[in-house]
Length: 513
Image (cartoon, rainbow, N blue to C red; front, side):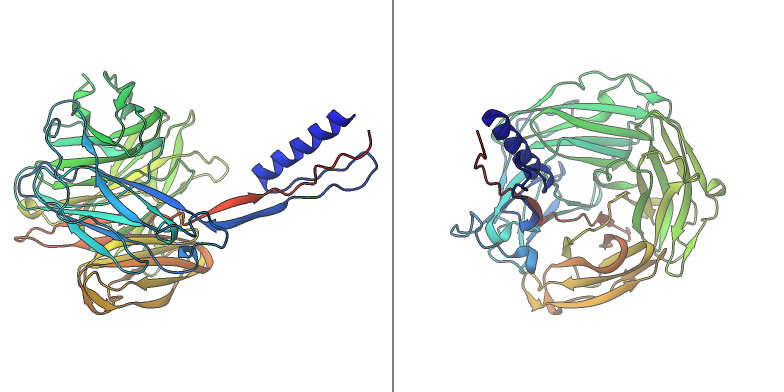
């Protein structure tokens, strides 16, 4: 009996640690102590990985590192990092072997001129790393600098095949990534960059899906990514099938974890980063299509066994509409196949957000989606990518904003929502400012005038939901260069500044024999 009682209590305690609550009655009918509900505490350590910014000799890259202030940015009492000196630092990763040609393998890494190191929450810090020798970076933040730590990598290439403004929010390492809107066509060079921030090796697999289904590929299984290193893989060399314009890439790891992003360069449309899309879901929101977009291409993929019929809508500043030329406002996506549709004249001078929902609510099918957006025409055309993103649950930040160059797009679904938007001080000076914004359900609000007072340098924008429905957001950074409408779009992803910690308190006293 004693062993049975101990086993039951151990099971209840384990359940409490996983679920946050458990209930147990002892043999004599008295209630055993019940574990407390889980609490949310600030994270004590955060990690990020930034890929090699460019192979162009004329590339100019700026890193902007930032930790927001606020309740999520304060180390909780009892935290193990309380007595430690908080740090947030990026360090070069070693160059791995380039898979499928190209450059980068074997080159000696060159560190940024100054480390992108945050010294206190609330103040952005920038660093530069120019030319083709700039390495991939990995980094970590601890203590009060960890909750919400974000790094923006922004690169300007003024000439050559990689010409463009390339922007990427450096990602947290993970084990599963989806990238719709990739390509193996002759006009594109798409590299998936696998960066391992850890001290142990990782092993990754890459799967490719075109309009007809799985692309027969080689050398895509068991790709080794050594510790503290990066491996770029050219997608077009992974398959012997005909080049495909619309490809979905699925990256997973067998062991370890990696940061993953796709660098896409188009001979005519310039280049940018394609970040991972939100996890497969029956609906998708792609927020913040620029008002002056000249072409928008929607790419979607169904990873499951069922086909998906999607309703396409556009959330404008005044309401939700079915965009003209969207094939009747629906898109059929076959299981395991990549589907695409061109949406001409989509925004018509107003920033908007694309909403994808099941045509039949009774038949929800998980999908992943992304947009390829073009501004300008002819030789002045420039491209960027906008993946579907998840709603902001607690807080999200995007760094490297610049006065008169940044547009923050906010989209509410379901019901009206209020959010607090804060513009931090600039990296070289300025006074933070904030405002509360109400976003009507089914609309997109674009903010261009929230700039710190007397700002000098780059600043960060932080969005925190206050009340109401779900909110999705992205930031467009536009930096025209020699008549080319260079731009890049970054979705705002929840910063995961806090973590749920179960509180298991259990009296292990054994009652009876």
